[in-house]
Length: 116
Image 1 (cartoon, rainbow, N blue to C red):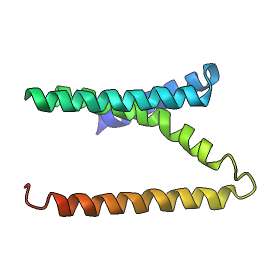
Image 2 (cartoon, rainbow, N blue to C red):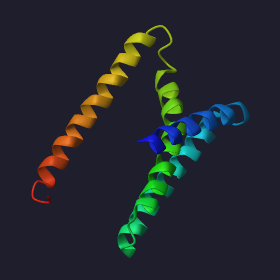
Image 3 (tube, rainbow, N blue to C red):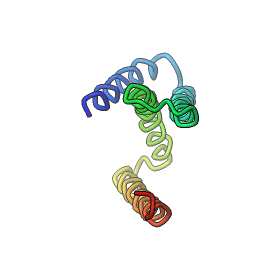
């Protein structure tokens, strides 16, 4: 958990630095590439059977840094058209995030019920 928090903090600081140098669409692309790269690391570890705590930690850290790049940019883009209704737009984003998470949790629970 400590590594997760530190990697999120490092990603946020890097995003704060890069947002001054690059535009947000470029930062969104960089974060997406980092998330995909972390996913590829996870898949390769699984396919080659070399899953270890270190390899999982590296993949998760790369994904978390990518998420810390993507999340602020995506929220900024989503709320850009709603300057006068920023509170309502933010609430709708929160409801949407929790609803999607609940739906995916239910699907995963149903799909993998016998995998334990």
